[in-house]
Image 1 (cartoon, one colour):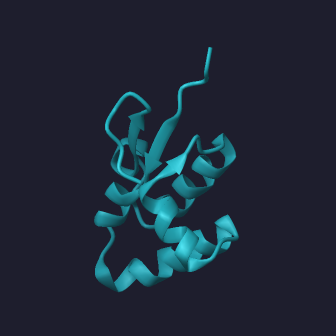
Image 2 (image 1 turned 90 degrees about the vertical axis):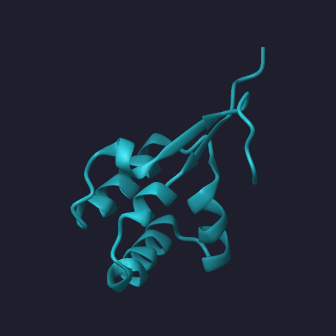
Length: 85
């Protein structure tokens, strides 16, 4: 039996960030993920089966910006849902 894929997006959390703070949180997340800006743009809307330590790290970054409820940060879809990548 195949493992169900989960698709995570932290766009809902980014939507709550003030425009003046956006570049700061973007830089923090890129440094945390160790990825390129292009990869960041892909991952912010569709991170497949995110490891728990990465999810927790992103939540810790959002917490610095007073967004500390996971349901305010993430949109999570299952492989059975229609997902746009």
